[in-house]
Length: 460
Ligand SMILES: [Zn+2]
Image 1 (cartoon, helix red, strand yellow):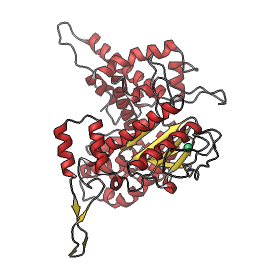
Image 2 (cartoon, rainbow, N blue to C red):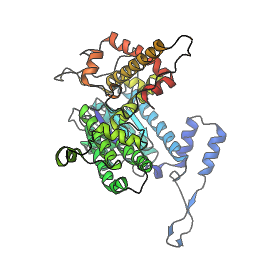
Image 3 (tube, protein in one colour):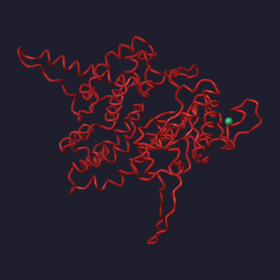
Image 4 (cartoon, rainbow, N blue to C red):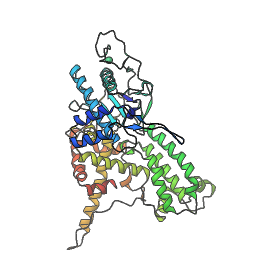
């Protein structure tokens, strides 16, 4: 699989005002709005300020206003038209568009403001798309920063080349087999790419991202340590800062990762390190070696101490799981979304790449572990609800749904993340049996459709 991360040179400054107007019209934005927006950009002028000196007025030919809340949308609309044109030219010239997961849903690009990624399992297809994109983008004033673009290769070593020029339709030998026209320089290959704040690596594992994220968080913890250990600052402030600074860094985008048991342990080690600082608890080394007679301080003790100080949060591994289940519910509730199409087939099977080259047991993916976690929690809650119903006295009101275990009960089965074994117990070794996935789906889907019930399941 090939991923191209494109870097547009001065993206927001390059787009012409004429193209904004054309894109708005193509999107059939009602005329009054189109007129209002284009009026914003009619004969704009600017001055340059240097200290106290102001320059004279200059006309602004192109570019989107900085800081204007409308700007990202205008840029996305222009870029979407551009991608549409690329797709149209591609399909008129070549065969099918790349479809990484299903032939009925081609998918080859993602855009977030000016952050653009192109991807395809086939390097020839991707190079053709890149060349067509370079041509169409140049027409509206967008040029690539060739040395800042990045190529991420997953299980491949083939290069992808830029065009040799931005002008006219591409005549290279990839776009026209047999043509003598050469292509341009190769897209620089990177082993690790940072996209929207997430580190992606050639192995497509969570490890790279988690490792970097933990390193940044530990560095921040070092800075914040005097604050956490201070005896003059109320504990609830510290818990707030922990949540808003450290947890925000380490848990960013974690809902889409498939964490291993070892990675979960690493997350929780950080969690207890912070709670130890806040609750003024000495390290395990101190209690085991230096002063064995002191009151013990297992992780459970620390959780209880933190609870006494008013902390109601979960461990980092549980919070990661909660966020994952929250996302799973969202995916199940939106069968037409791209996320759903990438995760499940129409018959609720998991989308996974079958390969004959992989040695060893099948690799666990996000969907299987998320479904196992959800299924386990739902089973537990339903069991508790049934017990409460059975214990009910005659004529007593129907008991309210049972709440999940308290967050500080860190060793409760409810909060254990699915392991390879639990996933296999539920699915069987092959992970791809139709009847097991359908059984799981039937257990999970009704809860996901009920938002109140799903809040109970995901703890969010
Ligand atoms: Zn070409």
